Amino acid sequence: MGAAAVEVERLAKHYPGPPPVDAVKGIDLEVRRGEIFGLLGPNGAGKTTTVGMCTTRVIPSAGRATVDGVDVVADPPGARSRIGVVTQFNTLDRSCTVFENIKYHCRYFGMGHGEAKARAGELLETFRLSDRADADVAALSGGMAQRLQVARAIAHRPVVLFLDEPTSGLDPQSRIALWEVLGALHDEGTTIILTTHYMEEADQLCDRLAVIDNGEILVEGAPEQLKRQVGVATVVRLRLAGTDAEKEEARTALSAVAGVERAEMVDGEVLVYLAEREGPLPAVVHCAMGFGLVDMALTEPTLETVFIQLTGRALRD
Image (cartoon, rainbow, N blue to C red; front, side):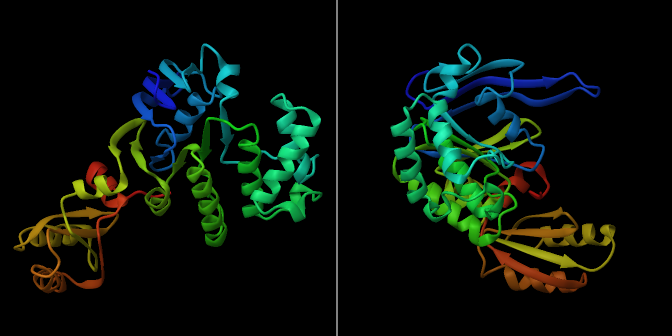
């Protein structure tokens, strides 16, 4: 254990209840320096608990986690000096201005008054918040508040930045703006670990990711690598009329169409997986029309396709 920015070995968290819950079930992870690593999974999968253990906010029931070689349980202050954290919720100090939120964070981590003031000014400029320096944080939009939280989290120049669902609740424009901020930090060499249930976010940002569900890591790799593992070129999503039993009959019939790799029922829709698009598609449509075809859509394999293949259900909020 040394070269990686974050290393996790058999990390677990058990809550005795009642009812007892194994939130994280002995996972292993290695996050390389300078990469953006994602934990992708539905709400309740164990993503936030994993980040909580890595950032000293949750005490593990078993296993070990290190940040920059520092054990988070054996030396919590040493670990905290090496990390920046942005949680799901707005944790800005509402008694301070935008500028003061960053300046006092810097002071907390040992910077002198002059250095803290200069660092705060520098970050407000970088994150396009200089014109709001004296503003009450309660007056910031959701996107501005999230940018300020990221700026504050990196003010002490941490080795690793942890972001828990960083764009949850943001409008699309603010989400894209935050992606640009994270991309710039990545370009500067910052190691970033983020949790998300947005497939597009994981696909767009992450060098590598782990798909997590029910406290277990199901698969790990680069987004393109994981999508290739699905082994199909096209996914046909079919919305059919009729009962679940009739849709299951349609699924069986579609599975038998030449050129179809497999067909699955997911959340009331039938997903048909094709090794190639052109050949079998007309036959698939013809078959589906016999079962009350209402709508259809064609896509390339996505990270949701990977999740469905692993769990048999869609990745939902």
